[in-house]
Length: 155
Image (cartoon, rainbow, N blue to C red; front, top):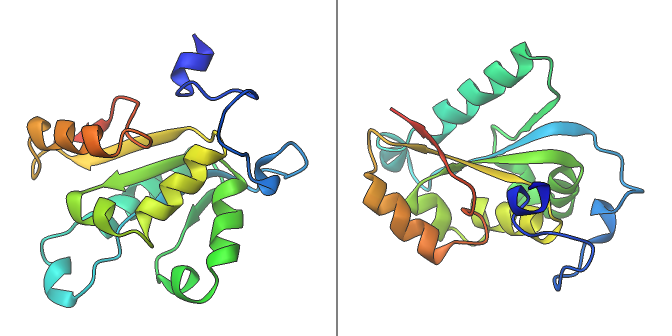
């Protein structure tokens, strides 16, 4: 039941649980929204991660949930430790998934690793209009740590 839904995480997990993720860490956010910021203005024309992240944040806010969404990418560049604390102090992480996002080891991939290692549930979200189910299935094979749950497929 619950253990399977949480991806098999338990206190007996072989992965070390970061200090901030333990019970002493208050959960400041209900939802941490992880998304790809893109590498260039041209890239942003084909990547709707920011728009999806803002839409998810708006929906969550309307439901009264506390959200963390870094719109500027400043946290990732200037305060990686603070960003990690924000991931670890969240109840759930929503990852806006794309191939480019998953290949960035210092962006969404890193945030999803932090969540996974702390046994924080990860909800994958992807644009099913732009990416075929077969593409998502391939990503699942490569990034199973973060994509173990069924995705929310936007279409």
